[in-house]
Image (cartoon, rainbow, N blue to C red; front, top):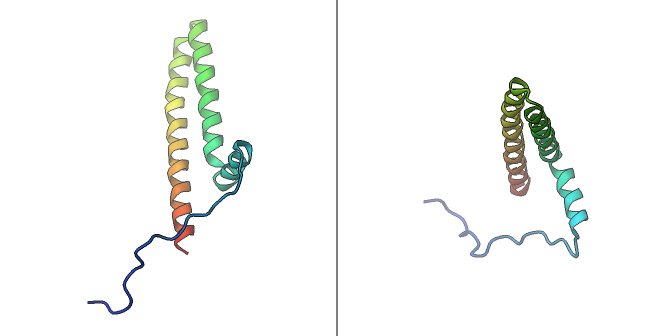
Length: 93
């Protein structure tokens, strides 16, 4: 058995952000992980262009944009997971 004191019964306290509004929180989160908003903007841009292509009857371009949208969503999801991993690593130190 490992020697030493037992682990604490209560978890470590979370940081408190006093009176943080939506804009302040958005800017803080964007600074912490700037790739997520970038991925969201790319996804919205590709989706919009794909819908415009679909409306104009350009089905080939529309299909390509819908596939690109999936890639952009994957990038956004990977950026979100990467940001979570980095935040977890920082909290361990």
